Every structure is written in structure tokens, then in C-alpha cells.
Length: 295
Ligand code: AMP
Image (cartoon, rainbow, N blue to C red; front, side, top):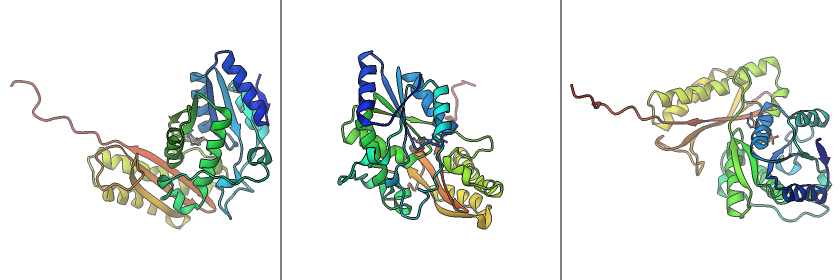
């Protein structure tokens, strides 16, 4: 039976009890409006843990002024039904007052990884993310917490929070889940009209172009970015690009040559909806010539 808990102390008690029973704790933090991307994280948690906690909390501090906090989709009844169907043990649904209390003063500095990209376009966003993730990791004290690669910069910051601040929780990255047409699943996709959705498909198309160009041997990051921009330009005026870049997976700094692990990242606005997506760029070395056959 799925249990819904709103208080921190009750949540801690439920986790303590599960741990006493010898169950490993898996945790999936979300902002609700769940889709198959979230469910993939829940399934990974279910596979690897005896006790699964999912939080549903639309965190106000990670929305900048003028962003969509007020209209962010909320559908708790449906979320609870979806999570019950996945055999989740506890859904943590704290109120804003429960989460932040009356007079919060301390925030978590997300450090240099937060400077560029989303951090630049959305001032304060990662301070809000780092603070809420730190609080949730503290409250749940899970063995493993599951985060999607869809929010790649967030994932990298969260990995550092866990490592640098000595959480015992291990961070497990999970691959991006896409819709049948290639668009990465996002709670914000429901804002898109049919026409905007067609326009938005230029984002995964641009990522495909980047992957293909690397697969064909391109190693110059500027050329890969040009391939992405060309695909994005095809969207016309309906799409406004915030950034398209090729970055080092460790530092998130732009690379000039694609030699080690790199990631193509894109953020764009389609109408009033802001979308982000990314993909791995894996340079595969051509097979050594000359062969071993003695002919
Ligand atoms: P959110 O509810 O948007 O805060 O997302 C909660 C978690 O789900 C984060 O770790 C996201 O990266 C992850 N997530 C969101 N969309 C996807 C997706 N399409 N594929 C995989 N993970 C996702």
C-alpha cells in the first residue's frame, strides 16, 4: 500500500523503520506532473531498493521571478495513482511551510558548475535546486537517489553536492526518456500547441545532427555546434535559441575538440515554453588499419 506523508518527522520515522527491516532506501525527487521519464527513475529505484520514496514538491526557490511557478502543472491525484501502480512505498508531499519553515536563512551555493548555461539564463535557479536537494537528501537519507540525465547540468551539480558535502547517498544517473516523436519527455511539454510541438522537434533533430557528425568523424566542436545550429535554424522564428554547445562532461565548459567524454546541450524557447535537452557525444575511434591477416 502506498503511503502519503507530509511531515519530515513522519517521513524519517518511515525510513528508519524500513531500514530496521533491512530494506535499502531508494529515493526519486520530483516536482510532480509525472510522465514516463519520472516513471523510469521510479522503476530504477524499485529494481535496486527494498523501500522506495518519491517526493512531489514544486520548489518555489528554483523558479526565477517571472517564470512559470504559478502555472507549473500540478496533478497530485494522478501522480499518486501512477506511483501506486509502480509499488512505491512512500510519497513525500511536504507543503512549502513544512519544507522551508518560517525564517529560512541558509542556502547552498552550487559552485562554478552553475555559472553557465541554465545558471546564466535562470539566475538563482541552481541555488534553489542545490538547497532543496540538500534538504531532501538530508531528510530521506536514502542509499541511492535517482536523477535524470535530461537535466544534465542539474545532475552534475547534484553529484557534487553528494560528494562534496559528504552525503552517504549515492547518486544514480538515469537515461533520457523520449516521446515517440523524439521530444524528451518533460512536464512542460503539455504547454505546447500542436504547431509548437512540431517546432520543438528541431531540438532532438539538432542533437541527432550533432551525434551523426561525431559518428562520421568530426572532432571540431565548432563544426558540431554549426550542425546543431543549422538544424535549429530550420525551425524558423517559432524557436528562440538560448544556447547550443558542446561541453566537457566533468566541467561543463565548452570544448574545442571532441576527444574524451562530451555532451551536446541545447536550451530553447518555443512560444512561452522553455525546453532543454542534451545527448552524449561518443567519439568512436575507427578500427586500426593494417589488420592482422598475413596476406
Ligand atoms: P522534475 O519533476 O522535472 O523536477 O524532474 C524530476 C526528475 O526526473 C529529475 O531527476 C529529472 O532529470 C528527471 N526527468 C525529467 N524528465 C525526464 C526524462 N524525459 N527522462 C529521464 N528523466 C527525466
